[in-house]
Image 1 (spheres, helix red, strand yellow):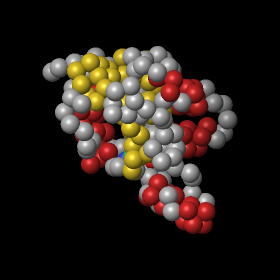
Image 2 (spheres, rainbow, N blue to C red):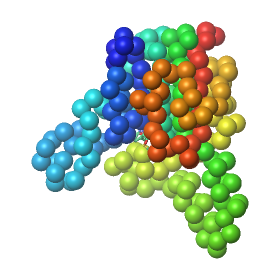
Image 3 (cartoon, helix red, strand yellow):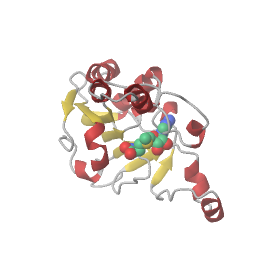
Length: 203
Ligand SMILES: C[S@@+](CC[C@H](N)C(=O)[O-])C[C@H]1O[C@@H](n2cnc3c(N)ncnc32)[C@H](O)[C@@H]1O
């Protein structure tokens, strides 16, 4: 249990190890940063101790129907479609009936809209940079460096439904069925994100 007797999971938490949550991230720098001389030598970020290093592409190590809510911000776009579907199905499996699943991703529609109204000569470069779809060595050092896909409302809704969540809903920043959403939702993501969530009802 992470807090209030509830099990709440934060997938791809980054450096924000939220108290009361089971925070998961798979950056290779997590373990290295816990060795003091390595942390200094490579100038690694200070990963909080309450972050568990796990690769969710290998599944979620929780029992069926054992989790109260799952939150994931700016992480699902780093998975391929096939990986994201597997992970979303794992989320469906581990959530309790009535449990809440919330995904926050960069909003492709917003990026396209910005491109279409940008009159500058390098609008196309800005657009492609924001998609960040080119993989390189950085992906190994920091698996959050580049994207493998981008979502809009339709594709994210499709992901939820394919995973078993019957009625995904678009939400606003901080609008959620998750109690104390303010503990985990990041204000810095507000203006670039698409928020979607669903309750796990029995199939
Ligand atoms: C762009 S960061 C987002 C961090 C934070 N949630 C936010 O919104 O600012 C994506 C995070 O997902 C993590 N990540 C990527 N692939 C992962 C995987 N397979 N399993 C667990 N975490 C992963 C990365 O290490 C990175 O910290």
